[in-house]
Image (cartoon, rainbow, N blue to C red; front, side, top):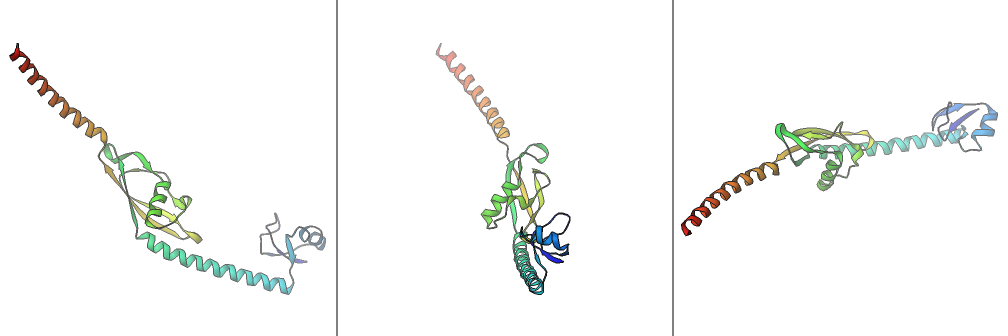
Length: 180
């Protein structure tokens, strides 16, 4: 007997496939559990119709994803982060950071669809792949710019304060000597 599977059945087939099984297996196991229906002309036509509908929907989703991919590939994201010597970042840019900036620009993408082999940890331009609906890939450019480290600024201020402090102390000593 030929049946159309309504669910994936181990060692038999996947959903939507027409398979040949023994009559007792179909009547006593597959039909009562709703795992299959009889493969008569009506059910086969319905299956073909459902396949066409699903294929048309998939094509519409893919076309929409292609349009979004074109718009998204024109976008380049820019991050500013503290960096040390050699352009190495103190932190890292992750897919969550990229997701937040994409939302700010107007693209709602799940962070799991943003493909980073490892977080971005260096200054420069990086290509990041985003997989959209229907498996459509899109590459965006992520620019990472180093900002001045507060450590260098505080060292410079400490040096300036020390020089100023020494000058004030010597002026203060000189005035103290004059008053004695």
